[in-house]
Image (cartoon, rainbow, N blue to C red; front, side, top):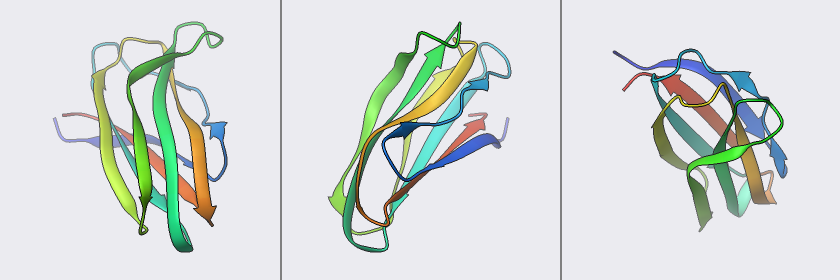
Length: 109
């Protein structure tokens, strides 16, 4: 099945993205993130989190760390099967002039 985007977030500060309902349990998703900044180096750390009640959130897969470097930096950082009812992106660190972390979650392999 080809990938189709289902949601994206743009985070410019330490914050969590919007919690969204998973489409179907067992479906494979891929999270892709791109970090950009307007000048110099930038860095960020992001993780995919899942919840079944919207209150208790758990890390899904490993955190993706974008080390300091030239803009833009891109990575497909996790590929999982839906096992939670809701998902969100958590940006736990971000720095750099004009830094923005854009994440996309796509369904499919």
